[in-house]
Image (cartoon, rainbow, N blue to C red; front, side, top):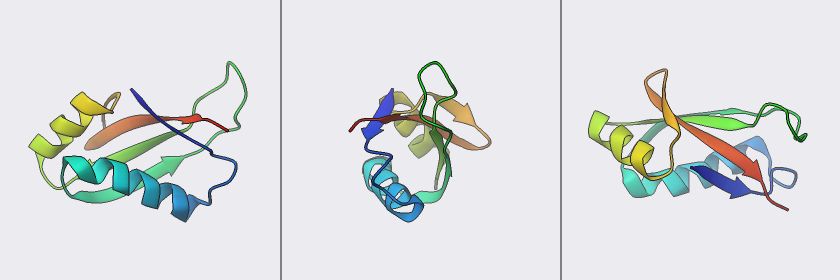
Length: 82
């Protein structure tokens, strides 16, 4: 699963706010770590690690839009969509 957004037109705080809004549907977001890489075909993808306030919230997020658990949170791939 992924979140699609225009990575070229958003600042890091805007990205974090957007991700917080999307993930907030599954509980209380306690931390977001955004990892951006050059947007090139066949290269590493940008992603975010989102930590929720409770394990069951992490599970709901992971089952809905997450890609897996990582460092106490949920890894979510970010796809550039112009």
